[in-house]
Length: 365
Length: 125
Image: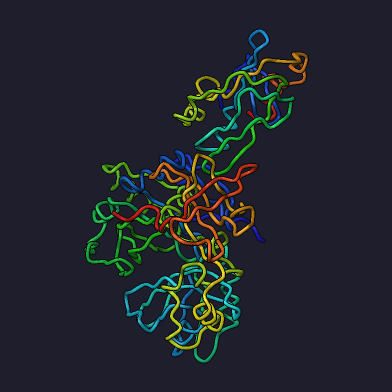
């Protein structure tokens, strides 16, 4: 590892009282006011996340679409210009390299990957290149702010002539926000119905200008900066997988509940044989959502039991500030994975009853 | 950071306030800041504990942490108000956010704890 990187917003974080931690090689804000207060700000009004640490790759060339089809599980031929697709990259054995977003810009694609996987993903994609494909790692060139919550549109609309209400979920457009050239993307990792992710140059001056403009515009909505802590509790309530917790190179997309982004009918892609066998034979285990009885928190790595037999493990667990209950995700052997089934989670010396429930835990309103 | 001068401290960031043979125990302002939002405290009353034992756990959003007792004795009271409103541990760690009371079985142990000055040095305040 080289030196720890700072995003263009580092001084903004300090100014807003962030507690800074190292995450994926970056100095990132884990919290400002407190995780629960920040969580509720996003659910009740609007919050701003610095997610500039995410990676962005450009895919160009005549064979760009064929390449994206080979390295991802979703069907990119369905992805028209201006649309975005949630997808995954797999190894040959079906293990997940990363989950990602694919943007179709018409003349090229942009793939957005997890910060901790940038180098690994880029090397994997390079290795899988064929024909007329050019891959460019633009991760250091973008600042990225996520503005999420029911007042996200009201906040950002003050700063742009682009009609934001015309940008549908999982589509994007290019335009100016606060006078800065931006990719305006109707996406997010919070489960909020209204949320945008805004990509601008990583130069500090325009980035900070954008940050300040957003906070000024959002003042009337009590807009707040949100750290990685609340990013995690928000995505968990939404039932979204986190790479490294719920999915990794030992899990496949079918058992992880990501069959909706896995399209074997499109043709060949990395990991397809494993995907086909999972679909035809059924997965041995499934990623399920659960609510824990009582107030102990089931955390990543805790074991799951049935009648004294180990039947799985917790991959993510935390409190749900909205439900006032403790929730989590975990892999459970298929025969125990039915909705409403009770499992026991080993929390230190206790085996705590937990109910398998539908994901998302908190529905979009 | 708030560090009251009249308390004794541990390397694990607990404090103890002694009144007769009763020690009131909680976690320090530094500790609550590191833990972040506390959501539950799990301590069993009536347990006999020895200095340094884990006598319960603190569930915070970010992490779970043991409460190590600074003194030996019997747990005679647990602050049940915390679990109605866990935020008091963050807001008032030396007051409303106290966690348990112990009847001391070996008051000499108090001499082994950190003074205000020592603790201040430990956390670099």
